[in-house]
Length: 64
Image (tube, rainbow, N blue to C red; front, side):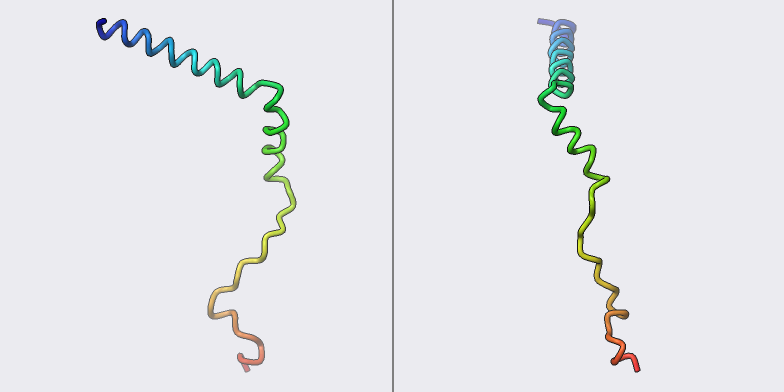
């Protein structure tokens, strides 16, 4: 087997893998997962607020 045959086989294998990936990604069973993932950036963020820098964490009584 020479290098040209090897490259041809590798091209065919990679093309088949690419086609299989596209079919998997656009299959009907994946639609719900992708729709849910598309909504994530628009969801309600309820993360706790970031802590203030160390110099602003003092209470108002300590600043007087």
